[in-house]
Length: 464
Image (cartoon, rainbow, N blue to C red; front, top):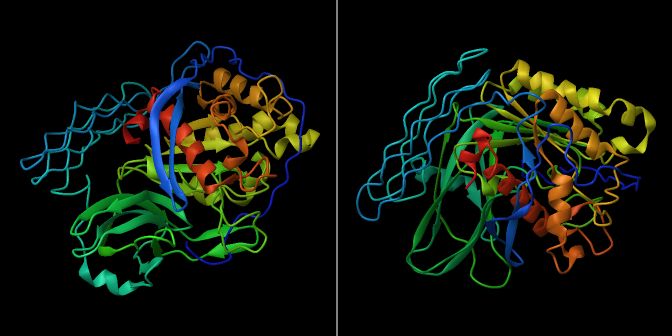
């Protein structure tokens, strides 16, 4: 929620001796990092253009393969003045316990493209249900929902424009379409939803042009250390830099998205949602990479970020994860990143793998796909000394031994840092070495999305 005072609390960094660095865990087959797909986003302080780093994601453990959903067909190409072409190939069969996903939506043209056909169920374990492609929207972004003129009465202000919309159901995904621009004047607009999650990067829109952007968002009642935020309210904020053209919101629509999958996140302060209005925040620009992930995803999936500051794998599991466990469904994903705080005492280090396995087992029990992340690196880290008391290697080893998908974010972030001229620019302040600023969190979310896009996970079809 875009509620003042809601944020993650401060978390301190404690250096530790690390081991493992870039090496893969047994059977973990970490692919080599390379320059991946381009990530181009813009914050209110100007354009940020960075290359994602490919590789360092595994889906195979020792002696087996991951039993996840079959890959959905790709999106059809957009039509210009004619129909958008049909959605891509038939979805792959659902492997093991999770459902096959449908083809991507047809491209947006003047006439909607047709969606891809559904996949067949899995051959082993519990049968996966068939996926179904969504139809492409006419003349706008794929998956657009109808605009409701009455919703504009729920919006106030000029920069930012803040919209507060009651929704009928809590702990649910909603697909939202915004129409940006003005018939008479040029405008600039960026869109955030819920707790300052960037869902549409900054756009420059010519006078007379109207641009539709569609995204999906998870709405829930949030409970965190030191704050809470009400549910059943959809918050949308449209803003622009103070200097230059103001944002213009021409239309707004939303609809429940009861069948799309959700990425649940259990993690610490490097991933969580931050509120710039919090008095104790390191800097108003502070953000977590999970907070900025949605802008890299299609409207066919939503993010439910349960990460919170100061948490270990043990503490988050008991305090914040129970509602996420209840909400997870077949076909969902669970991203798990801990280590920054677990390394601070011997008890958490000794129980680290067993605590991570609680999340893995819970996800599998719900027929969701768990994805383990090695902790994102601090500014001071090196490949020889990652700084997590060996916990990054424990994650690699666990993923390989338990056949869990792995994103080696320690290795990926270290590789990315080597491409950045001013490394401090990624962090909330020049002296900060753990927590990211908005630009840095966005760039790290881009690194994560590139790794997902180049993986064998069915999730890659939902990455732009």
